[in-house]
Length: 192
Image (cartoon, rainbow, N blue to C red; front, side):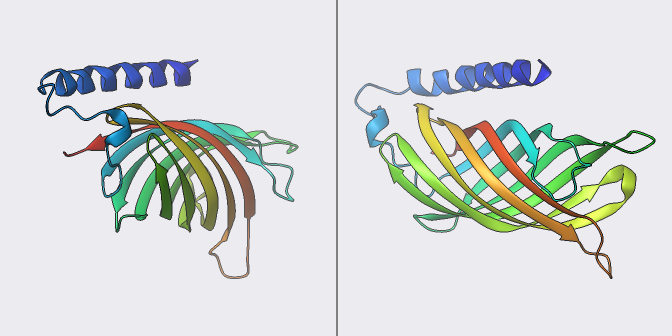
């Protein structure tokens, strides 16, 4: 419920921010949505979704997650997207139930394929996962695909699925985690 309220508030704020920009432009200089070039633009984003545990270890639960991102253009079709994601997870099937917080820091290289008001992003990159209550640190590899549609002149709705493979950086091995993310989010374009 809190997640739905957060998305609704963020959406309303962006609409309020975006409207004065559109209304203050003269009709002659207003671009139609289909002609706005979104390549080489900076975006900030908020996303939420569900993380499914697909590990061999069945003791980790699947959970809701949320996060923030910045999309930095490197060229017309390539972007760098650092992210900060959060979730809580449970260790199940243990004598004492254990809950802990997890922070995920992926840095993704994105291949952007855009067509008018829609586009597809192919994502690939490493990351670091910190399990706070267990002091574990994992290195991850992220592979995904995203679809976006422009819903306002500066606002995109994103849908994404991502496979994340992670393993311990401790000598001798340790935890390994495989996750499937299904996420939805908003990205707001910064600049002109």
